[in-house]
Image (cartoon, rainbow, N blue to C red; front, side):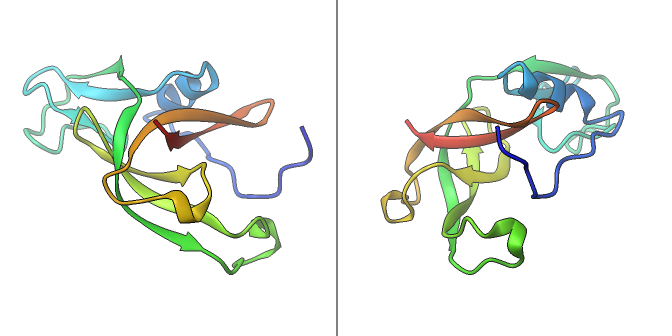
Length: 133
């Protein structure tokens, strides 16, 4: 593992379970105990019914590309690995999350099925990404 220069997540008490699961190569989302909605991004209350009865559940890791862009010009030296695909993935469970698609930019399409993969960028940080299914 080489030195990593990009910004890294700084888990809050609310998001810490998400990042700990990612380090175990598991994708977890909060689920509301009142209305049963899956929730992403991590928060203290359900955005659907405002309940605070949230629990973490492992999810399938499957989804589809909802939208994407190809970043071709690095915004800084840290992102000199351009081109790369920045996408919004709609998970099978419903929520949408922003992530990278690990594929050649010319191969990515809207509605393309994807599955989760994990990038261990440092010994303490694992990023959630997606690859073609």
